[in-house]
Each structure stands twice: as C-alpha cells, then as structure tokens.
Length: 253
Image (cartoon, rainbow, N blue to C red; front, side):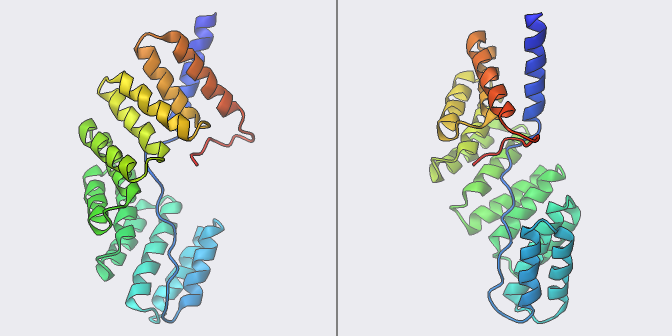
C-alpha cells in the first residue's frame, strides 16, 4: 500500500513540474519617451499591466495609426503590442509585431528577445536561438537571454550548449536560482546526477520555496539509489505545494 501511495505521489509531483518551464518571461512594456500619440500608448501600458490585453491592443493600435509617434516610439509601441498578443497566447501576431518593431529599430534588443520566446512557444527553437543570439550581441550582459537560449538548446537536445549558456547566465547573476535549476536538468539529461543535485541544492539555497527544485533533486537522488533522500525531497515539494491556497502554483522570486 505504501509503495502505491508513494508512486501516486511521484506521479502527482511530476505533473506539477510540467506546469513550469525553463523559460524566463517576456520583457514588459517600455514607456515611449517622446513624440505625439503618447496618451494612447501609455494608456495601453496601463491596460496591459492591469491584465486587459484586448484594451491594450486597441490602444496600442490607435497610437500606431495616429502617425504621431516618432520612429523610436513607434518601434516600442509595436513591441508592446506584441507583448499583449503574447499574453493573449497568440504567438503568430506577437511575432508579426516584434518583427515590425525590429524593422523600424534593428537595435531594439528586447524585441529580438521577446520574439525568441514566441518562436520557442511555437516549437521553432532554431529561430528562437537566432533571436536570443542577436539580443545577446546587442546586450552582452542580458542574463535572461543567455538563460532562454540555454533552454532552447536543451529543447533541441543539445545539453552541452544548454549548460554553457546557463553557466554564462550564472556568471552574470550568481543569484539566478532558475539558471541553477535548469542547468541541473541539463546535467540530469547527461546522466550526471551529482551535478544535478549540486545545482538544485544551490537553487534551493537561493530560493528555498520552489517545490519543483526539490522534486528534481529528489528524482536525481532516486536515480542514484538513495531513496530516503529522494523521499525527503518529494515530501518537501509536497509540503511547499500544499501550502499554497486557492490552487495557486509556486512562483520563482
């Protein structure tokens, strides 16, 4: 009976992990700095911040069609509308707007980064990697671009390149818990469970309330045959997850 319950718990926790991914979020809206039509553009940002993406899209569109924005602000507003489309789950329209933003301002690093996320959501990891690489060329200290490119390499099955990018992200931000966690997954894929455990342990030191990290460290302990430590991590993951009310999932700081 205990074995059945333990297996059920492991299955439940595995489903929990599927709710998360090694992708950092899009950069949020940028406020246009000057030019006409700013009221609608700024109101669009406020609407997006409030979760009303349909209203945000209408306002961004009005600002774009006003022909009153400077080229810089026009590029930013296309990028912001792309963010709203992405938040609505429409990656195709998001890509169109990010592409337009890039056509207007080829040095808008955030647009490449956000388009990379959209390509990744569509499963086109080659294009995602290309966009993250361009974002990094424009901003070599963009920690999350390295992180997300690492995730794209991981999704393509190249754990070595994934590890290299996660490592660079960690070098830029030694407190980046998610990068340790995701690098741990890449080590796991290579069968190096000791390094998985080390990276998950570091992630836990930084953020001790992330249930999925305990789960993955537990999996690594189990693969090493240490079922007592595996169960301890599974129990901790269940404890953290159960502490959230109203069905809210865990969130990284």
